[in-house]
Length: 214
Image (cartoon, rainbow, N blue to C red; front, side, top):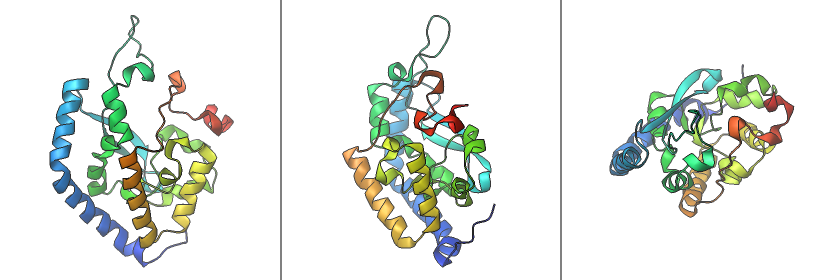
């Protein structure tokens, strides 16, 4: 899977900058990371981290880290309760402020992710991308991206993936700075996050149609 559009920033600067900024962020935010980890342990129990396989650069699978936001409450049959029940007020706060994403800084250090790039989606979505949409996997996935500053979870699948492709086709230093700035603003005002329970298909977006519904 090749993508021809490239440049000095994308090829030589973006990765070293990601590593440096992520390392500085971990050092600077270490008190917050510690406090959130302790609160997750106290309010939601173990494990503190939510880990899930996601496709990264060139569709290579990696383990993505987040702070846990849901409890493990189950019904009398041992089945997990709906997300709306397991997602506590504290979990909603972590998501709305994007504090649950902070462990992703370690993914950036490892080289699995970038600060800015298409958000890594579920592995099971891989067979359903069009050839154009697969361009999103020619760069490292990001903690935030163009789709996230233009609606986040409120965008339907087609618009979200189109924004990812647009980003890959237009990567520049200034665009990354703009996305970082707007991401911080949206996190502070808690804009653009919706929590929707879809039962056994909770991770699928019904707007995607048959490709993601099969």
